[in-house]
Image 1 (cartoon, rainbow, N blue to C red):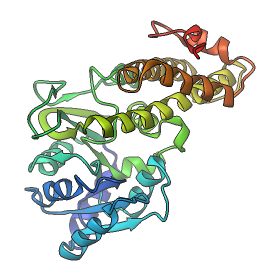
Image 2 (cartoon, rainbow, N blue to C red):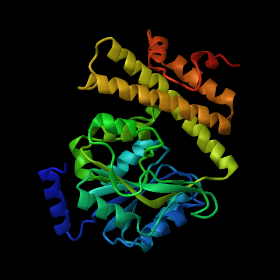
Image 3 (cartoon, rainbow, N blue to C red):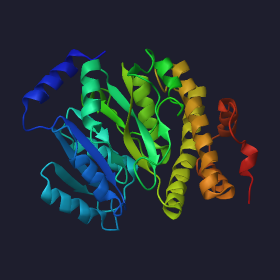
Image 4 (cartoon, one colour):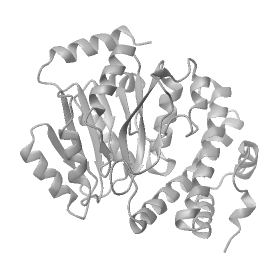
Length: 338
């Protein structure tokens, strides 16, 4: 349930006419071919009280210059440049640090949003008192409506009343695990110190999982408001390789933490819930790696995972993997590839 502090924050923000209600955080990295279309879709929103934060993560293809051009033309657009590529976690966190809105949303620099994206999510969040509201999305490659539609409900619906209920929604068939297509109450993120973890442990996955386990109310709505761009084969292959490396690095990091828990080190107040969450995340990571073999090839993906495990030695790592593995798409033996 929304707290009294959150309600006070909302009222104070409404009275501050110079402060935007929503901060749209756009991580940008080498998206020059698509960035203008993304920004245009934001600047044509039916909602008026928002800012666009373009966080340029050391782009080398002219994306930073495009961002600056928009900032000069539109007062609601602000740009932050990283001098070099710092990764997704640092980019998301920078956006949260400089945001001024009482609510935040994330939009990837090569994606598009519907004109009513902000207005719909803002209305549903304010009416419901939710901490997070998530919308449906659609893949596209050429036009915003040429791909598969992902909608999880026929009407606005709560995503479970307990943390354990919401944990089941971590599976992608219920709600997408990426930060985008969602509106977050900033007071909730601040109260629980929600930030994106360091690069090697899949920051977007852990951020969403922590939000699921921590929030009081999480609402999903049926509207398709976000359009996720599927890039050309060559770019998608590079994107797939980057995701495979992140997921591969996340597996031993997660299992090392699992090993520490098994030896009695406290990780989370609810140990049983944390154990189940670790299992969900472990299975999800491996399933994603299995899916990425179709883009990057089986051997390169398995080699990434094997290398990541060798770089993170743990006395009981294999035992922990075996203990956590339930219906995983491949086994430890599959890592023995040349």
